[in-house]
Length: 271
Image 1: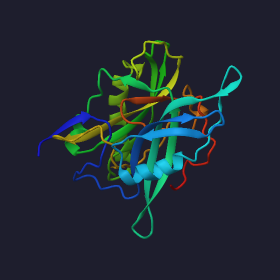
Image 2: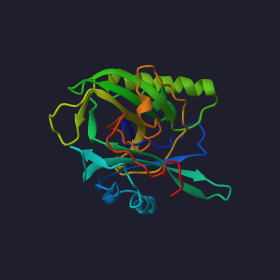
Image 3: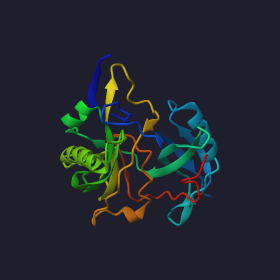
Image 4: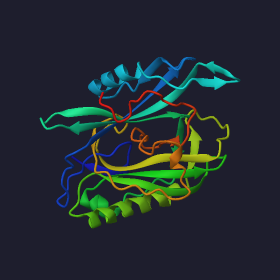
């Protein structure tokens, strides 16, 4: 079957003679929306209909019980709606089974990256059969134009022979992502031309191999080998949990602050 290299919505484990399959983590990104009542309870919610059925069922049962800090407008708590991006991990147990864990939940304005130019897939990585996910922090102005960009974390799609080799691959993917990102614009997903507040966003750039006819928009479990994090001085990562972005799909972005504060202690817990 023919294959093609491109930047896609998710990355998957890629086979190659120099790499071995990750053994510890499988991740899944889910998107949805919810409505929070004046008392902070969840009034309604919706999860991507194409999501893995078992994961979707577990998430829906959890979301229904969540509580938020009430959203206040003009001194009064109000009904508020937001998009949400959720990250899940399947953690292996001693009995060859997996525990489903919620690793992230982010909320706020639904924005998209106008990713033109698109990052170039590093030629050496393509030949080696290696994918990656690069998390970028983008500082934008009121027009959404990126004025600063940095790589916070890069996760490879397979293990390498040693740590030095892994770092070389990560730097290769980061250079490609950053070279493109500095010319990007953050836009409202609904197409509105309303100005954005100058702020920082975090966004993934994912490299993977797509097979002919594969649906790149369908959520799927993906193997991943997490890399180290690198917070540069200008990054405002203290305004939210840095790991609250596992659920972001490629092409999406989330601000490093949000009006929606989840009070329920659910991050890192088993569903």
